[in-house]
Length: 213
Image (cartoon, rainbow, N blue to C red):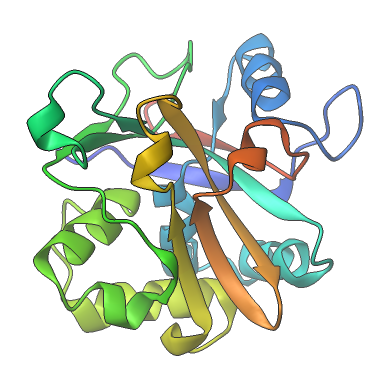
């Protein structure tokens, strides 16, 4: 079976409430529309799409306000059953989608705890590289440099200025899933799955579709 090709809409979506919504709002909106919500994989891969309009709109939404973020259809799901694998988990793209027949899931032995680590440092460990690859749904097994370049191109920033955040392990037994969001703050880019407030945060979202649809 070949790699599923998914392309993003060039502009952020607009739901009945406007251009912002919570993760739940966007899931319901895209399911009602019968379309996909873009995942972290599509966002990270956007610079390779060849669409300058899309990349420009993404960077405007990312950097237009420190209070704004782009919510993805991706979530981290934490292992709560095996106390010996407290850091294990799943990166699930297309979470709660009624359109994606087979949600894309990547199991990880460890979802590291990151509190604002630059992405170029994170990928120097096996666990960190596996985590970033999972966010990118990297079936191509890109080199570290190429993976970092895609993330850098998305934000229009160097990898040293793009920070990763994940949920503190002490909360993972209470909070089973966390959304993955992309944003900007304190003069740096963020790929965030660590802020508990993201579960009810209002952000942008982009639609997407597979070429088979």
